[in-house]
Length: 242
Image 1: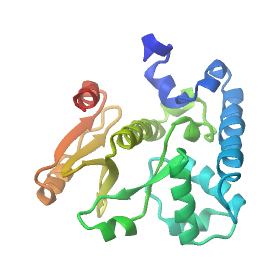
Image 2 (image 1 turned 90 degrees about the vertical axis):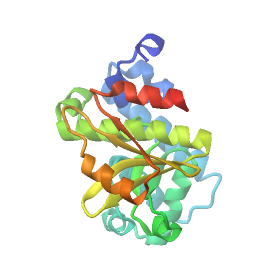
Image 3 (image 1 turned 90 degrees about the horizontal axis):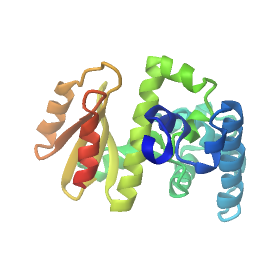
């Protein structure tokens, strides 16, 4: 990444992959304005509103903003309805979220279950398709964001999610998360009958192997891939193997 594009990993996580904004990296305020106005607003008004009938365009735009801001978090559609200023119901939000996903902006990843009905009923884990859609809406600068351990962890997890979404779309795989009570596995990749549980850890966080054991008891044939600073090569090896 560094040799090809001159990006450090931190810069790629923060600035994302929209090449039009690369020249503005030195001025984050201008860069954020570019992403919001030239990428987000233009795409919604031209790529979505002009091609699809949307009865509540203001609701769609506000849902997009919230979904990007909450990238990497599990948020029920009922909670999103309460956060939105414009009136809407759960069915409308679900349809708009599917539209945003099909347009390549933000998806609602479903909880993995062996039962299809449980997948559909689960609250979505929101995931942007490019991290800049999230970071352009944050008040923090890149330096401030990476100094905040909690926010840094969210940014890293979201960046892994963007790559997984891209890989899954290309390869026709399915992407989920898994949660039982308060225990969560960040991502589940389903390739046919093959399941890979992916846990993302930043800094010195330890992998909770008890969660993995719990998941493997339910799905014995599944494999596990931890991604952390200490195991950075695991991600590259995983991608190379596919």
